[in-house]
Amino acid sequence: MDRKILVTRSSMPPYEEYIEAIKPLWESHWLTNMGMYHAQLENKLKSYLDVPELSLMVNGHMALEMAIQMMGFPEGAEIITTPFTFISTTHAIVRNHLNPVFCDVKMSDGTIDERKIEELITEKTAAIVPVHVYGNICNIEEIQKIADKYDLKVIYDAAHAFGIKYKGRGIGNYGDASVFSFHATKIFNSIEGGAVSFSEHKYYGKLYNLKNFGIQNEELVAAVGANAKMNEFCAIMGLCNLEHIDAALEDRKKQYEFYRQAVNEIQGIGLFEEKADATKNYAYFPIIVQEEYKRTRDEIYDLLKENDIHARKYFYPLTADQACFRNKYKNKNLDNARKLSGRILILPMYEGLELQQIANIMDIIRGG
Ligand SMILES: *Cc1c(COP(=O)(O)O)cnc(C)c1O
Image (cartoon, rainbow, N blue to C red; front, side, top):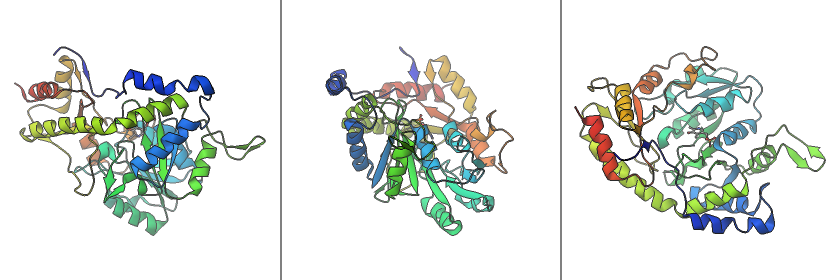
């Protein structure tokens, strides 16, 4: 193979488009602090994601932190969450002075196992923070039932679920809030960026305030906020990329189908179950290397690496097992999560990856 293949590559608009689009900034000198492009992107994303309300953020992580902070949970409250996720999910809980309680996941799709949530609830439980991991949609109905029964908030980490519709509605309509990431490595990027979607209008003002240091007016700081504002260069990158999102998804879809076909022909390599009532965004191509396969996940990972193909072990280790969290928080039974984490591999997929390259990747996995 003639060049290095990474697990992902950032989508970018044509150079001239971006350069043309940022020119007005040299007139206005307005570079950040909720500028006009910030407002434009907020509106366009609201409509693209089909959500009633949306607040842009500097990145997905701060969006998670702000979404959790705005709920005003008491310090030390327990948050039931999944360890099978990017470290950001757990960090956002802990950095809010809350205690994560790790719940196991389902082997069938890697999302939080809703049947195991209830046994983790105590009088300290304040919320559930599930993750639509790889765009696999959680069991929204069951999670909401539990939340209603115990009066808990539900904040979805929807960083992988950009653009997905569930039962005909944007995925960001479910729960009390959903958080998206527009990081350079995600299917839609604004270089760095993120957003919180929600339906209660009062959250818009809360988030606006929190992302701007809690400043209410020139002389009043009402809350301990942070600086989580998206700047105009990033907003413009988002606006440009959004113009091309359909083509980008179309390209990914082709790759996804090609991969799927090839994997289906291999005994011992599994895929996640798909939900019939959820659309797909083709954000990732995760495979599950079963015990009976002739090679382990790590062997496949190494073999690809020798060929300059860089797959990733997302998500291994579990966040609960990371040095900074190990043995600190409740994690009774994470058997499925640990099993999955030892078998999962994300294969390269990004706009512009050629089917021939995918065929080569699959040859290496299949080979010998
Ligand atoms: C990317 C990601 C985040 C964090 O988003 P950033 O924009 O990188 O800060 C949070 N959760 C999950 C599951 C992610 O994949």
